[in-house]
Image (cartoon, rainbow over all chains, first blue to last red):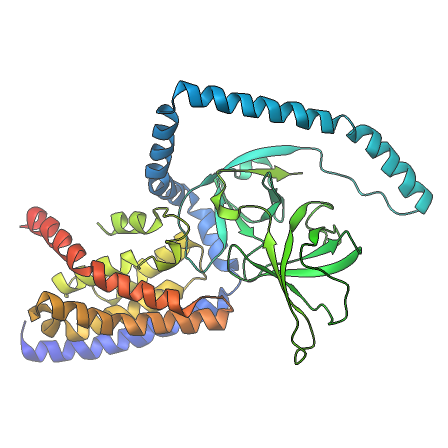
Length: 273
Length: 147
């Protein structure tokens, strides 16, 4: 390349840099809450979905190979354990109708409003792709055709996972409760005090915020959803209080909560209606 | 080629390794910018960044901003970097990646995204360590298919 041309080129490049810098920054300001890019993603989901599938293909392959290579003995063993578990759990479930009736009656006596429990459950599979390490979002393989709605609760077998934040044609985005921008209102069943729980961006940690220094709260307390935030239904497990830091210089306690669900390590999740 | 890099970037890794993942698409872009500085311009970097934003569900402009700045540096210094030895290239890459992670850190901070600074540093170092291998693989592919 000619040297003079090179010099001229550089000038244009600086202008371009400035232009793109400004465009990017304005995009960032407009799209802080992902509203604009949601629309783009919905319109482009036919292109995006195959890319996700291609990226998750190796891990799927690995898993199916692992399934295929399972020995007969280990399968028999697993089957035995699972049968046992189903037996015990159906024993526990027997009591639920009676408890439901009792609960209804007691609530009537107390004059409190009836909270309806979820009636329908749909199992969705996670599409295993790595998103940005800073965002706590996962992608599931259920979309518009399955009558999902925004803010729908997603749980796994151990506890609450998050809510649906975006619905596309054949995949949806779930924001985990550990996302830095996510918060929910939980309740401590031991004291029936409401607790505000927000995500930290770390999958293994939540924070309980705005709890005064003299509040009755202990390490090991279990937190459940309160149903008061109008997003999550009542009574699902959120997590367990693992550490309480008492710093007299702060106005509030510094409380770490370990979520009970295994977050993005799941393979399958449940959607509640 | 870039599509392959994007897919590679989306590959699931074990949870423990996740925070240390190097920005593979950016490394691909850097290689192509070094190889064809006339072809890979800022428009290219910007649009790749937008694609990444859409795929990774980050706010639009996040990756495009970081990519544009990095590729600008490459376009500024590619004549020097091209002539360097492998070890020197690693050092140059380290210098060039610092503004990238600085920008992403600043944007993270403004958007209120939590992150661990040690993990960010580790991610830079891993990018630098895998660079020679990546460089040779990409050069092999390029020489095989474009000559």
